[in-house]
Image 1 (tube, rainbow, N blue to C red):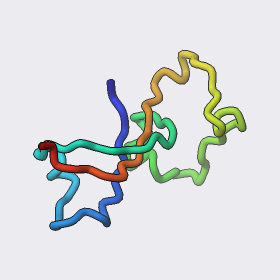
Image 2: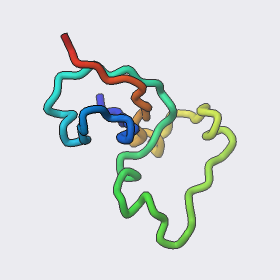
Image 3: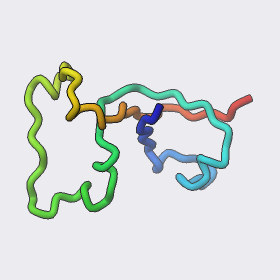
Image 4: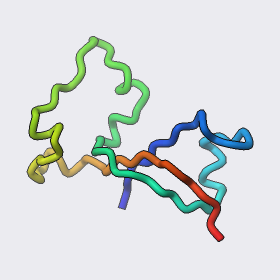
Length: 87
């Protein structure tokens, strides 16, 4: 299962970077904050060239979207609040 983990890199201690995380055995404690498409993670897609952003319906904002073919490519999005070394 694939999910998206978001980190606040400004709070990393000991000058760790995102490149250090895969090398470490960590337990992640996170809160589900929504869903996003994997393609939306591209830098080119983060900054709308034409100034337009996708509009969401109120149902989508509230998280009550029916599972359709269009929504199957969405991944669960989590904000990591704590990452601890696995013992």
